[in-house]
Amino acid sequence: MPKPLLALIAAVLVAFGVSHYSDHIDPYYLDVITGVGINVILAVSLNLVNGYTGQFSLGHAGFMSVGAYLSAAITLLLGPKLFGDAGGTDFHQGLLFFAALIVGGMGAAVAGLAVGIPSLRLKGDYLALVTLGFGEIIRVIFQNVESLGGALGLNGIPNYTTVFWVYSFAALTVFTVVCLVRSTYGRGFLATRDDEIASEAVGLDTTRYKIVAFVIGAFFAGVAGGLYGHFKLTITPTGFDFTKSIEIVVMVILGGMGNTPGVILAAILLTVLPEVLRSVDEYRMVLYSLLLIVLMLVRPKGLFNFDYARIAGRLRLRLGGPRKEGTR
Amino acid sequence: MTEFLQQVLNGLSLGAIYALIALGYTMVYGVLRFINFAHSDVFMVGAFIGYFVGEHLPSGTVWGGLVVLAAAMAGCAVLGILIERLVYRPLRGGPTLNVLITAIGMSLFLEYTGQLVFGATPRAFPTIFPAKVISVHGLIISMNQVIVILVASVLMVALEFTVFRTKIGTAMRAVALNPKAAQLMGINIDVVISFTFGLGSMLAAAGGVLYALNYPSIDPLMGVVPGLKAFVAAVLGGVGNIPGAALGALILGMVETFVDGSRWSTYKDAIAFAILIGILLFRPAGLLGRYTAEKV
Figure 1 (cartoon, rainbow over the protein chains, first blue to last red):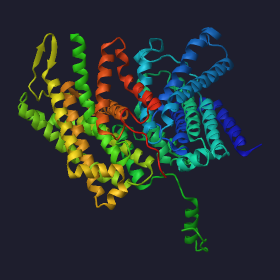
Figure 2: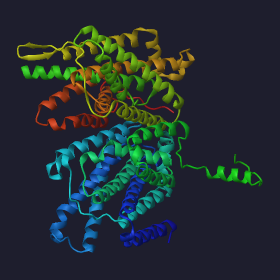
Figure 3: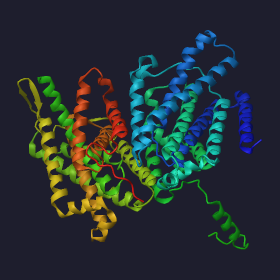
Figure 4: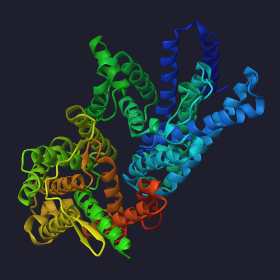
């Protein structure tokens, strides 16, 4: 079996094991662990769009909200109809939750397609603005739809999200993104980012690549939204605003655009850090914005984007070994 | 009929404010080819400068109002030039994505620093101009609306004069057309870009004060939505095109006012983005813009 697939299966098994013993973990830590997993899904999926394909999306929270609302609507409305008020067995609930997450992801992917087709045909900064506007439109729509709770949002969502679900999907996200980018087809994403005109000149359909990346990113954002809804148990239209999108963008940029391990590290760091620094919470967004500016000026490739060859060269130098040609 | 005229008047004053912001977006896009996200927050700072200066002046006089406007415009011109000098200039010529991220970072920085310094709660804007209401055959014209339209028209004529009749304006147009060739002709690009930022920020500040006059409550996030809509207006007219920005803003102001008066009023904030998506689909270069192929 190929290595990435093995890793995926191993990750799912480990998630299942941890989930099995989750009763023994302090609920507070369990909350943080779940939050980390959801943010990993969001950041890694956004990295496919922002990092690997070089398109700047500011609407990830919007896609998240589509997934959250759709999946919550399914478990809330369909669940009691299928299994009665008792809610059925654990297996039934799991199956329903899985279906809800997938449908939520699909809904977000369709939204991604609808947003992506007009804006991705154009070069430049339009996508950032259109996705920003899309977030606004989604919020206005959810606030006006009474059957989805209007401005008050949806309450009483069943508590289905477990460590198993979160980390299985996190592993699946990393697996999909890494394998996609490394595949022959996936080289097109990198080519689109590196030089759009040259890629078009050699016959790549760059718009198609952008849309594919965008739709896949939106799908996983939708799944993350579903997990988030069944984890927080209540969702409101304002909970998925611009700030949430920016939070995910900061994770991607801090980790280094197009660098999945770095982005995962950044997602963990930026989820745990606010928990530790509760006292300075009001400075959080100021810090985030400064971080964006300073990183772009000083270290545009991200904080966790290490040049391994260079580090190895330096180590060798310090250890007194022969210096390899070509490494500085 | 009266109601229709009333809506036209309201739309005109809203559109005039959008136009003042949109002009700044479009000028910066013209010379640097990037969207200055922080522009909408310069607009917010302009309103706040107006608020603090306005508090110390006798309210309800024309001269006091003009002093407030001038102070806000001067303050924001300095801010705009500073932002360009400290943040955007080091990145000039770098990858567009980095510049875009920096611009977004700058915008967020101004917003959230504003929340820390000014507080997040909205403040009531002082009545700096004389507040009067004139009624003509049932048509209600507020003094503020008249001032908004007057000031915006004067500023736009002044801008037209600067861009098309002065030396620095010619330099601006030259840089927008081809920066490298302009440099070879002895134009100092840095000066031109600083000037463009200063000019755009001045207009945004004026827009901020006028907006605060008509919608008299200001807070650090007030710039986000008008800023976005002004950008939509700039795209609608053809980004980089100065008359286009004014035209797009007037159309957008009208459409929004009429939607607000109809039974779809709850969707008022979404209509601008629907227009944006429509224009990107059918006429990406904008109403007055011309499509140009990108050259290698």
